[in-house]
Length: 406
Ligand code: ATP
Ligand code: MG
Image (cartoon, rainbow, N blue to C red; front, side, top):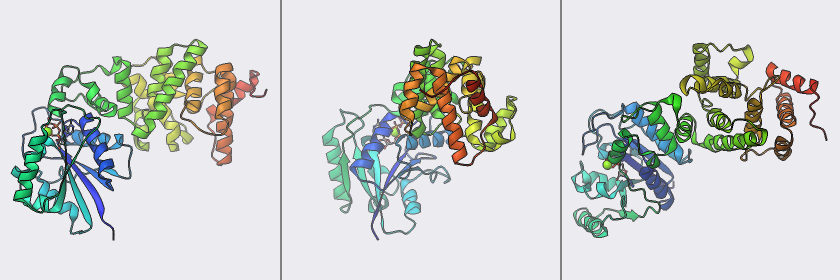
């Protein structure tokens, strides 16, 4: 049986920042890891959690966003092993539990210089160093190489079997969570956070942030939207935002509203079915039988609710998001723009997308019709029911002389 290389990246991740992300990304590549476990500590042995530290669920959720940001779902996981264990989070205990008697696992313990320099003071270093190879990296460009070397020599002398590898992070981000917490409390620090983590912090008002969610600037609105979805969807959301703005410019619609609708249009895409239903009930959105069973239809309704009730967006944005999946008869320009942008943004690839892109800038109604026809065809091919609003959109456009021919 071949050896499995598992990286262990422990920390308090309070909050996880771009320095952590750069370290994790570099280690996965440099060490050719099969797996990386990001492990938030419950009670770190070497420091007290500062006052105002978010609940463990929040730190876990943010660590999960850090993991998702790496876009390697089959490799990167967040482990709750330490959060679930009572008492101090000793790495030696974690290693025993994770190994679970399996001799074919090769553990790589990832740590910045600060942790590496104190390694001999950790709980049971002998056990740790027998069970894992150490991989250390600088956190600052000014980290002293001699200090790292002398610690390496000391550990080698004390524990002759120890295996240590030092790697360089090419895109080092010189920040600590401690510094970041201070910045966040002053309304700064976004540049050190992955957008989805930043959005999570804003939406949950962590670390003294007090953003008014109903009046967010564009970068904050993006961050909040991205914090609600999987990282893999962000490219599409970004593409839709940009396409919607271009179309708004072309067709004389409000670019800012098009942008905000684009940013938020898919924000509830990953909510579980019951949550969609609960949101619709909460905000009085009636649902028909088909919608109740189709999350794809539900996300436009609940996305619209979030836009209006959480982010304070005006009716135009609400309506554009509300109709972006089914379309309907007699749509406004902004509604058409979001529908078409979502269909043909630069990341979309399907037979006929080029024709749709061409039409979108020649005649918005014809592009809309092509989109609606494509949807109806696809649903029929897959023997799925077509929503009545989509059929009404089709009928309305045809009655008004719109055609995709020619
Ligand atoms: P705090 O200031 O609260 O201690 P931190 O920024 O040091 O936070 P931790 O959660 O303590 O973050 O660290 C987890 C791991 O990430 C440690 O091994 C640490 O050395 C490493 N690390 C932290 N910040 C960076 C960074 N900017 N670049 C590289 N590694 C980092
Ligand atoms: Mg630290």
